[in-house]
Image (tube, rainbow, N blue to C red; front, side, top):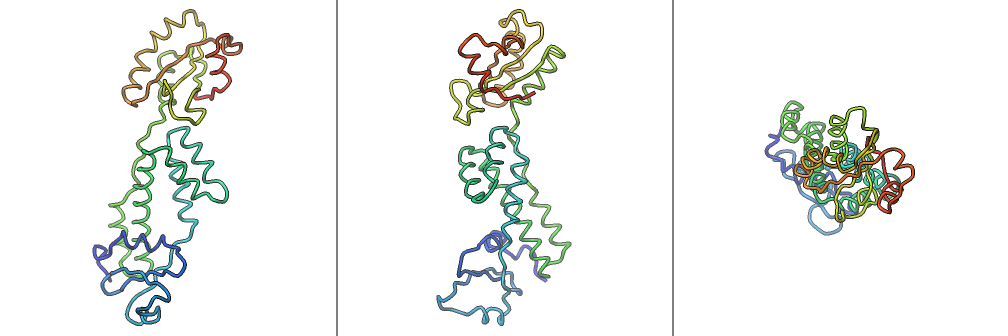
Length: 255
């Protein structure tokens, strides 16, 4: 059997992911060397490789790559990104739409690459064990070096809503999200805009002062500028200012 360290997992992952017509990938069972083979380009034939101790590496089924995308999206905390990515992977053309959507979120794109690489390495080790080239124990031991990376993006609107609930208790009726996050646009003057619906609202200015520490703490930790509009349920139902009219029209419930 091979020593797992003798196999270039990056090359093996590339082989398992490659569905190019006319290209096949092979591994030498004695050394763990991985190589590609182009049909009709000269050199040894597939039969020659098989006779010389090389084994064909069959590419993985597309459903495995789709499962990786689906499980990655399910773990995304960023509410707008998760919604867009979930739509992207529905129906034909999912792989292309998923990649295009990730370009809107550079931090998530980097996390996806780390996630995909970890999954690919574990898949490669599992393939080696299934082919009898390394032991299952060695595969499982090596796989522990490649866990799924932790998603680092916090669901900031939900986190703010939780802290506002602690601050206001039963007085907090709803927290609604509006603005660029809801419209799927780049952040504008304010990165994160919230409507905070409160019972017994007397002075919006006093409530802004009361929630200032919560908003500032999340602004510092997230790097986003977070603003809020405190309103009563009656004011939300019959908005009287252009800002509140727009906010009420596009608001999405957070909590």
